[in-house]
Every structure is written in structure tokens, then in C-alpha cells.
Length: 109
Image 1 (tube, rainbow, N blue to C red):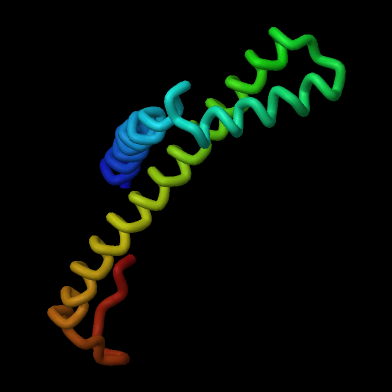
Image 2 (cartoon, rainbow, N blue to C red):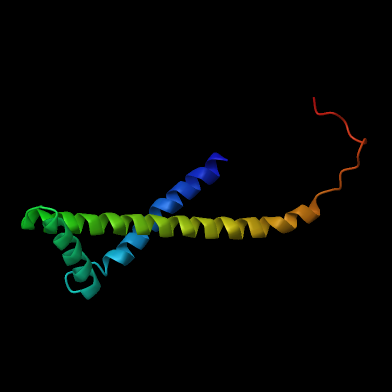
């Protein structure tokens, strides 16, 4: 129980960091989609009355927040994949269990 929970918690944190690093590699001023997204958000904020300098900063913060959200989502997908493989590996162990004969057993009290 607790060992599995701590393993998965650690795995989520590590995978989130790995995915964040992978995604952040594309979130630079040299990346056209990143620039377009950041400028679009900043333009929307300026249209809403935010000062230009603040709008640019807030836009970058929103993009970063979305990057972290997506990295975390990818980490949870990784955990689901690991748990699926573990369950698939454990499934054949069911065949090794003895059959239960009704009425022939002692109470475990």
C-alpha cells in the first residue's frame, strides 16, 4: 500500500519534471508558435485594459502555467501506463490461486 503510493508519487513528480523540461525546450523566443501564443494572450490582456509591460509578463505566466498543467497531465498518463502494465503482469497470477470449495474451509475469526 504505502510503498506503492510513495513510488507513484515520486514517479509523478519525476515524470512531470521530465515533461516540463521537454515542453520548455519549445517555449523560447526563437519558437514561432510560442511567440504567437504569448503575443495573442498579451494582446487580449491589453485589450482588457492591462498595461503593455504587465500584459507581456502575465501572458508569459499564463503560458508557463499551461505548460506545467500539460506536463502534469502527461505525468499522470505515464502513471496510468505503468499501472496498466503492472496489472497486466499480475493478471496471470490469478491462475496460480487454488479454487475455493464452498463449505470446506474454516472461519478466519
